[in-house]
Image (cartoon, rainbow, N blue to C red; front, side):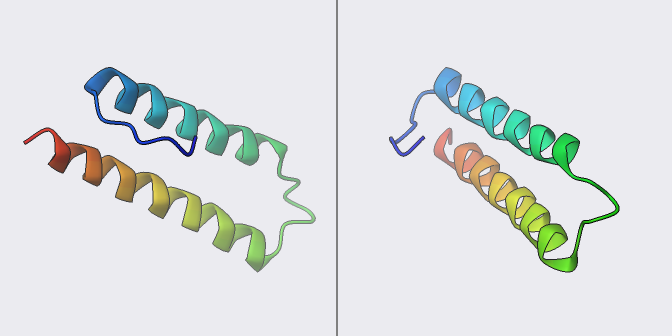
Length: 61
């Protein structure tokens, strides 16, 4: 996922893949053994996804 994504369809595919990756991580977490660092990583994943979505939104204008 290191290549530049410029067209609308590729951007949507990229965002869906990243969201699915996030959901897979959530599904794999054991609540009993989750620590603060794990939660921080999840928050960072969401922040990265939001940043990419905002970037794509700006690119279309």
